[in-house]
Length: 118
Image (cartoon, rainbow, N blue to C red; front, top):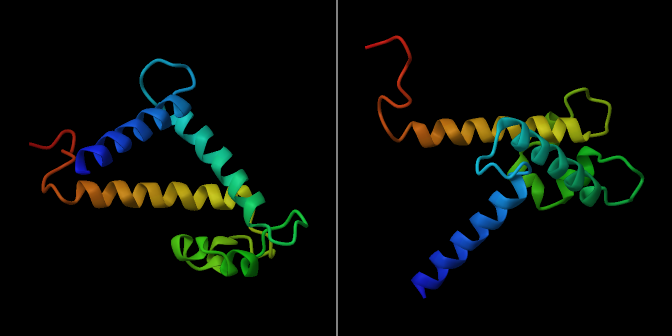
């Protein structure tokens, strides 16, 4: 069972890499990651727009299961116009990705090494 789980996880990782690596050079560049984040934000905004009026309000986001993951919907609406844009979702995703990376690195004292310091 455990081996099946590992195999499936590796299969999904390869599928994601293939989708993200648009130029097929074997690595995912910052531009490819940003493009994927933009598409994901647009899809998320469309899906969460409960009444289909083309706007994602803090109330609509708050009523969704995504609110637990994305935090306070009113804070996500950075321009406070009552419409959470794809750009605002994308910025939140980028901030979360940076926080996740910092958390991963914090497990290893001294990493990442600071350039120029010895």
